[in-house]
Length: 309
Length: 180
Image 1 (spheres, rainbow over the protein chains, first blue to last red):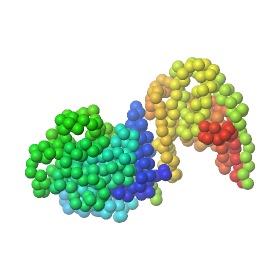
Image 2 (image 1 turned 90 degrees about the vertical axis):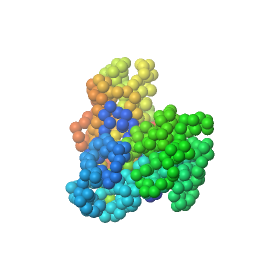
Image 3 (image 1 turned 90 degrees about the horizontal axis):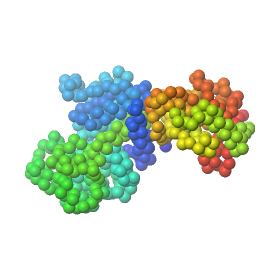
Image 4 (image 1 turned 135 degrees about the horizontal axis):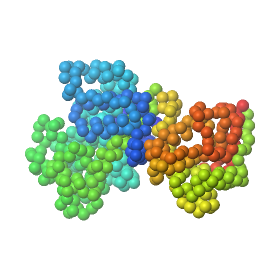
């Protein structure tokens, strides 16, 4: 296999194991490119890519933009907060107006789950989902798994605990799909109020005790408490959340086990994770960010090979 | 019917590799300022043989690396692109005399792409090209080898088949075939 089946990347759910492996292998090659004195290849110089963000983002947007520039694509950026969306323009109209200016690929983040799927049926350009509501965030899951694989050599039979706000997390859903496909064992851990009921369908372990979760896992992927998505209180206070689910050095020392610490960012330091853990030698948080560029280069490069079909 | 004629067997290949090595020594003496770069996938086999033979003749470490040109191809919009392979360039090429090594020189497009890859690792003093087989009169761009094993006249429909023991074959054989 030398390319992906679809010209869109909407979610991990649609990817086969072979496609995931192809993305990892290609990302490894791009990681080498990023270590060269000139960190750029001409592969996508014939393409124009639009980054369309209807929601805030630092890492993902920068990472995509950098990946596009490293591939020599022309890049345009769009933020809904400073656009005609504010004047009432619909999603499809906005996208079509961008596409008519000869854009070949769209990287889209949207607060509504399924927005990129809706668009993908109606346009010719490739779409990369950069996060749709609480649904999926495929490139984050790919870079998370790639980072674990880089550290541990394999994902098969490794124990990964996803800890924190699962209810509002597209990172969690995409990670669960990917890790299950690739043969890892997955546990989620958090307060019951932040664990959605449908999670039972994934066939993963559910745990409410952070001590048990940490004792069990090889890798702890700690998620951010997404205060902006919470209209009601899911726990009494941040202080209480931090006491029961926050990860600090004291807790890890008590468990006395080498656990790889991950976080997709942005970190609420002192709430879900303390600085003494986030900045420790077991943390691969910055490796995740670095690998993000290589993974996104691989995804957009591979999707571009399907352009004319 | 497929017609096949042999260009190289083991004996002839050994003699040619040996000759190419002596030509390299003439120009690069102790290889202090030189780097040998094999092209993925089969240029690396030839490169390894050259490095081994050079070591036997002059007993010095030969700086080397290998590269893949997939991301630098010029046919992304039109052709099926093969899977990218590994690049390993442990030496920066600034001010070095770089020798690109490949088995067959045909259109010259791969070598063009390889030169672009090399430039992303620095500014070499000079780039040379060593190939085992130069298919004359088939170039799409003006690229010529500095060192060659043999030059042959071919037409586009003919193919060069390279079977080396490194690829899992029992013995070294290189053929030219005609599909008629």
